[in-house]
Amino acid sequence: MLPGIALKHRHFKEIKERRPSLGFLEVHTENFFAPAGYAHECLLGLREHYPVSAHSVGLSLGSADGVDQNHLEKIKKFIEIFQPFLVSDHLSWSRMGEKFLADLLPLPLTEETLEIVCANVEKTQEFLGRKILIENPSTYLEFPESDIPEPEFLAEIAKITGCGVLLDVNNIFVSATNHGFSGQEYLEKISCAAVGEIHLAGFTRTEIAGQEILIDDHGSAVHPSVWALYREAVKKIGAKPTLVEWDTDVPELDVLLAEAEKAAEIMEMQYA
Image (cartoon, rainbow, N blue to C red):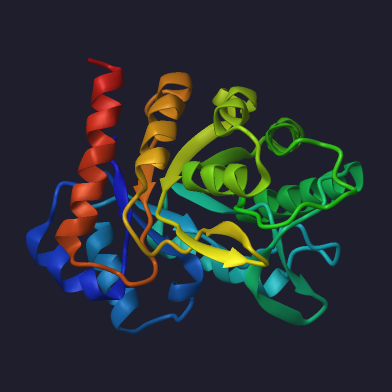
């Protein structure tokens, strides 16, 4: 499958008219919860020409309060309408009681957290009637309680629940740089069989308390170091559906298409 891009409002009309060569389009499910409207109608039209990947940001799979039933019902309705070939969310939490936080917050990687996440994933998959993918996070702090390395944590979730992994290569690079571990070693510990999709994106640099930190802002082209790590991922895992994300300072469509073409060339080289 050719790489895909994240579908943005400013590109709706141009993609519809040009029909560029793309493997798929990915959207945030929460942006399409309304039962009608311009975005809804555009995606219905584009769905006739491109497979759709549904990427959720609001399930809060790490929440001790469980998965919100209302949110699950809206995602199920999205699935019924748009028939995505992939459904995914994040290894994070964003809900406490009736309060929802506008961020993907990190989790302590412990046995207790593993039980919570697995229970929430199992409930989600049972209700939706399908397998989902869980994305590895970008992180800026580490919990002293964490005693399970992140790739092993993801592999265990997949083993227990039957879910898959959405491998975000940019997130690996960001977290590895921020915490001083090897992105290559992270890849070596990933369960290849569990990976169902790969994400690529850009990051920005900032300084906090005199220390440089990478921020996963999806606001620029994929960095050369992330491309290098992606090449290693493709060598190890094989060619998986690959998405180029660009969520802030969204550029012209041709810029996104050029990034997707770079991913396609790396995938082709692996099988040349």
